[in-house]
Length: 409
Image 1 (cartoon, helix red, strand yellow):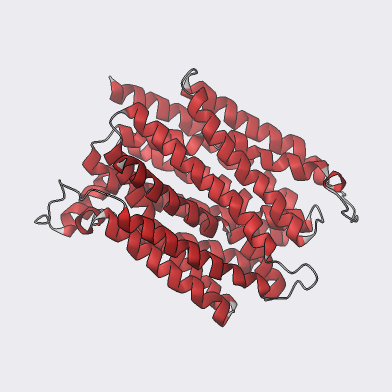
Image 2 (cartoon, helix red, strand yellow; image 1 turned 30 degrees about the vertical axis):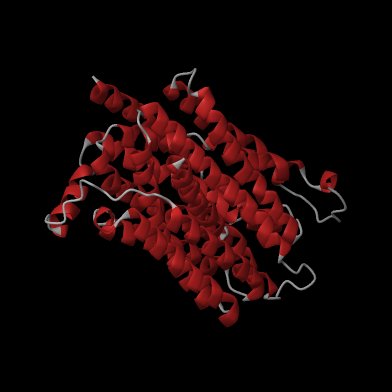
């Protein structure tokens, strides 16, 4: 029962932060409408979200075991609750930037803690992989929920209305409930945390981990993967609105197909990988992603404005493009599980810090590049560029297999 309560608490944390983090695409679209800013200006929101994730993870990941995972989770939840309440009360773009900065900083604490707690409650590599895929699947369910929650507050009759900001009162209430669940969860203190060890020594030990061949290839793979995922997910609502010419609320709702695809893909992958070779499986996934981009984007050319009266009125590409999430989904959990399972439990927190740092940098890079190309060229060109990092992941995949095989010998 204690394991179940702990799993529920960390899943709830991941669920609410999935809504907050993955709302950035919706908030970018709404900020362009409500605050009349450019796409390049709006793309900075990804940086305000991801750079604090990277900085906080880089600086404190090795220290989190000392203060305790429960304390770290509660600090993150309380900080974002305060920022969420302030956002609709002040209602300007600068406050939204600060909101995402707080979300990013808090998520760094949450992700390092959650990944480390998973190591505590897992007694085998198979158990670790299964639990990690489940929690990541719940993260995608949260992302899916967020698109519909935000679309409910959008005033389609007045695109400059700020009524959509009221969603943050609902999110603040959800954060309070999650914090209460964490308080009652029997999250174990870290027995091996040596408080006599100087923080600088722990920090240097974390940096040294990145020089290991397996860690280095893993970091490159994660960076490129997140660059692809965030580039697509962040700008898909704007792509739906400006390229497919869908209404704003439907543009946001259709993006939920991408989140649903990621959730289903990760849950299915957990079962498929029990029966097939992970390397061949991920190769097929990457090739399938490239095929979808090449095959579907031509369908988005020359679409004319039309009245949307039913789901059948939507362009076919609105349904097909988000399905890339099915093929994209397995890669991140597989890479992460292999990496963490190869380490002793006490090294999970510092390694998770490195994972979060390079995930954040990849997300920011992907969003800014996609947004800039979107601004100066068009949406199709922006999404075609995702083929370049896909090739990079395909190449690093081979190196990842070679080094993991060597480590396991």
